[in-house]
Length: 304
Ligand code: PPS
Image 1 (cartoon, rainbow, N blue to C red):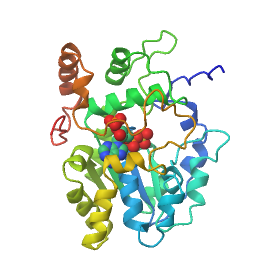
Image 2: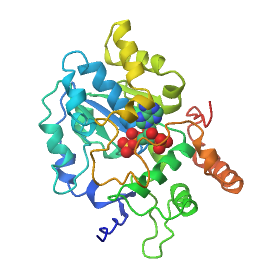
Image 3: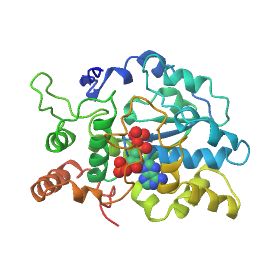
Image 4: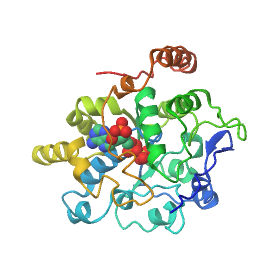
């Protein structure tokens, strides 16, 4: 059977987007957040699913354990801006979530977050991942996810990730979906300095010491799980366990082709070394310095 065509990127208020993330824009911008909503925000492939899984267990692991075995993570934590026919848009799924608090996922750059989240002073957790591993993960994701743009080869994908330009002559001024990684991580970082209910965390710290990061999340969220409960969540959310869990590994999602690449791929810090050539790495590092100059306190680790 012939595969449907991949979507085309376009410029949307200065950010590269595809139709499934902009076609429900008015409903998205008018979304009514509640004061106890928790927004989990990331650039794509930075650890959204991992943190969603942890927060879901922290909030509901004890009170409704059946959730974890019967509902896929994308239903427990809806993706706010997504709108893929014939499925209900993310805004509708979030509106009808029966839980309190509601856990809601977004990849929106900070300037696109619906204003009610700020008005309601909602808690937000932002997860950032180093650019090199983030780019590699994104490349493999675009290979296997049929509703993402065709990534091309690794070299052309990396160029678009870095430069914000396309190799395709028909569409200049585009990069990858949700635009520049550099703008995304910086924009949320700057917001964190003025919004006290925004917890900014790093994928690398989570890999290094999941328990310590869960402790920090708990103090941000005002939760105090027992030592046994915390241990259960720390162990349950390790990569190998989540990879086996059908309700967390996206194996129920038909738009993804696991024969090309699994969703839970490697879960490592430093996998970029298996992808970057020396020349790509040197060019990337030089370019990185200029793009990341404005927030010298925002530092990423590319190895542990
Ligand atoms: S998405 O599609 O944007 O929501 O993807 P996201 O969940 O943000 O990122 C997917 C990457 O996170 C890795 N992952 C984990 N790593 C370590 N431990 C755990 N538990 C874990 N869960 C998810 C996942 O494997 C993807 O990274 P890569 O490098 O591709 O393996």
